[in-house]
Length: 304
Image (cartoon, rainbow, N blue to C red; front, top):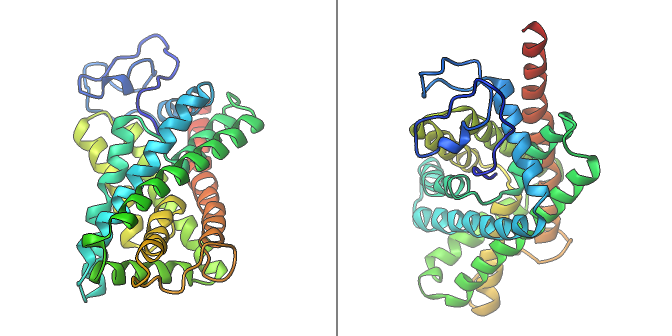
């Protein structure tokens, strides 16, 4: 998601006094005007997130570039997660370290104003529900965002794979192990873990935009990827890193293991995994996060 697009302004809105003041600019809230730390209402958060999706769709070339950079930032997290967990024999500790290393990737994306497809899935769906974006516009948003993220992540892991060096040996074995685990899961397991992934991630994204203090925003942004990595879930762009790294290390350095992962649509194929996780991520972000928040906002406004 982006943090620099602004929702339409209504009378009575008060900007937050922080480095992220643009989040609060132009959004009507139920909060006391002189309290910059009171969270926004659910309705204000929904309107803000939806407006940002609309802003992205109206600037497609800028959106593509932001998606490319966002994909690179996710790949940062995948590389670091594998690095810190290399050689760790206790599964719980390895998962914890991976989550801690991966967590900053979403913080980078949100604070820099770049784009992540799974966040765009939820945000665009809110815009469709708000009737500020057409279904065709939503399909365009998701398609461009997915292409940009995948290409950006592939560029980064290609550079790392070509470099070799510290990414060979024990690191390559760890990357092959993690990649094989993700690629080897049965269809329904991978699909449902992808649903859980965006249930974590887009809940934290919505809380990020609901919060008004810098510390709260950073905490929520960190929590999403931290949770989905620790939980062993499936994220379409993160898997470009987790599956792409062993494939590309093996391509440039044939002695490096690839864990039986392939590039195509076959069993343990990268494209197979990306197809399944894209669908699961879409379901999780739209039906389990965006829709409930939109319904809550509608019900609260009816009472008001």
